[in-house]
Image (cartoon, rainbow, N blue to C red; front, side, top):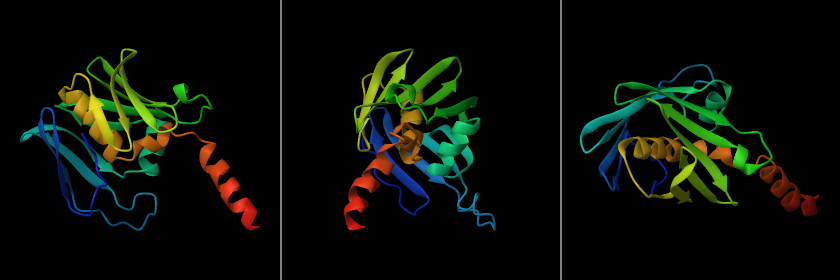
Length: 176
C-alpha cells in the first residue's frame, strides 16, 4: 500500500489488499485561532463500508501533540478508539504511536533511520518506509491505523528528536 501525500481535495482513494480505501474530509473549518486552523472531520471507508473516523482532526504536528498530551479520540467501526504517542525518548524503540480499540493494541515504532514497524502484541505485523507499507496479515483495524498514521502525519512522532537539530547544525554551521 502506498500512501501518497494528501491533496487539497476532500476525497482521497487508494487500493489495499482488502479493497479500495477512501478518505473523506469535511471542508476546512476556518477559525481565528491558529491552533485549530484547518480542522476537518475525517471519515474512512473500505469498499464502500464505513471503517472509522476522527472528528476535528488537524494532521501533522498538531495531531502528534494531541496524541502525546492525552490522546486523540477516534471511532473504528462504531467502537471508541484511542491514539496516543510517546515522542521524547532518545531510544527509538521507546518512541511510538499506539492505537487501542476493543482490547487490541497496535503500536508503530521506528526501526533504523527510515523504517517504521507495526507491532501487535509485541510481534511485527507490518513495516513501512517513505509512505509505502506492507502488512503481513492485513485486517480492517490494521488498514485503518496505517492510513491514519501515514495520512495524518503521525510518523513525525517516532522520528529521532535530535536529528533535525543535528542536521541543521551540520548544514548551517559552515554558512556562518
